[in-house]
Length: 115
Length: 145
Image (tube, rainbow over all chains, first blue to last red):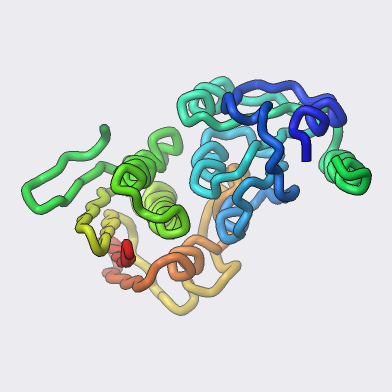
């Protein structure tokens, strides 16, 4: 999966970025969940994680699970403190106007055409 | 770095009640130490998440406390000790989905009743010591090899 193509497809705005993210093509899948402990029980290294949570704790969860990026759907506003922590921890956070279903569908479509 | 080191490769970190901003600093600091030691990523994940869940429990339920991590080349032992109400029924607390967390905690994505089950999932050995009205200590042991 080409990260830049995926980002374009979901009309994603990069709010904090791990510098490698835009040049990598190693997304392994998409996971959508808002129970943080359930997220941490999964093996989702290099996944895109979609969550409606915007509190600072999502950065720790993303760090510990080694996810590729957090996507906040539906243009939900993200707390400043969360973005600052994401920048410090080198975690990519992307905002999209799409909802979770549409983001997952976009990912699948790109996957099916071999991108 | 957060955490004071003593002569026995033991690091101590404070945990503050209801403070979700500094919650995770102890587990993040330990994670970094293990990375610097060149420990395998899957082992680091086990240690960091089990410690983080215990930290969050101390923040949410335990009125704060402190974390102590003893790190050697071969293993890590983490103790998270809180000053909370204690756990009345450990079997019930271990049951996935059971929670006593408040609505505000659940709104942040915690309190799903999966904290202790996750600690058990990622710990090689987990020990719970609890006393009603005094507090709870969770001891998490993991091999680093």
